[in-house]
Length: 246
Image (cartoon, rainbow, N blue to C red; front, side, top):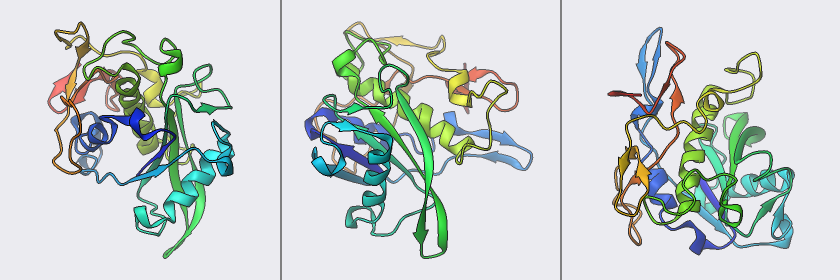
């Protein structure tokens, strides 16, 4: 579930990029019972123009939660909070998150409790902002990127980071190490050696499927530079688990 806050024109390629993550091998994990894989995703998008209800162009953590709760109950997401979904608030570059976006973090995830048809449930959500106004803070490729949009391309890597951690530490009491780092943190800002140079000088290490729904707008290649994820069986960082790409 994607809830875009701010200027919609800031998100070119982001919805289509997120759609490609479903079933991607980076999220394959060896467990005692066999091998599991994140199911193919369905991305539902709710757009919310800048609103004084949520603080205008400065969001607090509580405002992000309010956005999520409103989106979870809105018609664009089915009208009922979904405990199996992950709700992401993706902000445009003119939006500030007052608890430390671009200075303390590039994104975060947490959970809240909401009523569902099955009773009270933990609803997982997170925030990822567009770093274009301070391009060096949360962007690895600052001058060019695979889809010619460094800020948005950088967001896709942070989305992968936060989704990975939401799966393995959904209520902040599951997988983290003695220092408090989650598995995405353990491989942050590492992209592996299997990278391809593009004609515009940028690199990519992953080609995500280009979805047919929603309709792809603009030049979308499906190519991204996405950070590696921690493997549970040997504590090493991988771009892809099946086939293995380190």
